Length: 222
Image (cartoon, rainbow, N blue to C red; front, side, top):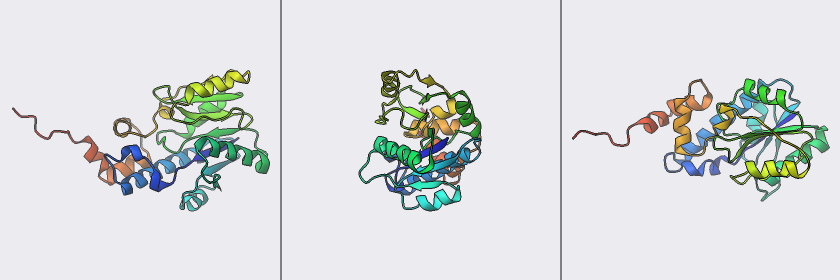
């Protein structure tokens, strides 16, 4: 089992947070979330390796820090195409028989959460986001069992793709997998949830947390 972690270039990361975070803050947030995800994978049992899929200039150094391998996706490839290419690379170069796709923006995921998913996995496992709209994890045996359709509304298409090849997907719901950080309310939910993580530490030490939790109107007096 290989873990595959797609990473958008930091300069383009988390544009939907531009209303509350400046470019440097978004970059710092993306880096902290990636650290959380790679730390969780480092503590996960049974993985043959971790493949970081990115053209981010800092990705090689980050991958080396976590003993991961870097795969630069084809130029102009979208996320789905990049992940198909990564799966093909792992099969051709490492003889991979299964992959776990885990986005880099889920800071609450722990090794125990990943182990829970892998323990239940048989052929195709899907973990939805909180709204049941997106796909926050795919485990596939073999890699590229279905064609990926990551477009922001990927969960139902992935379920349909599984049934189209005669496979009933296992659907696992997990509250830590469910929270991916895309919007200001996602940040607020993260800060309201218990448990330490590098992302929370970044938000607190940078002053972002206190800024986000300030009342929108400083005076409610009549």
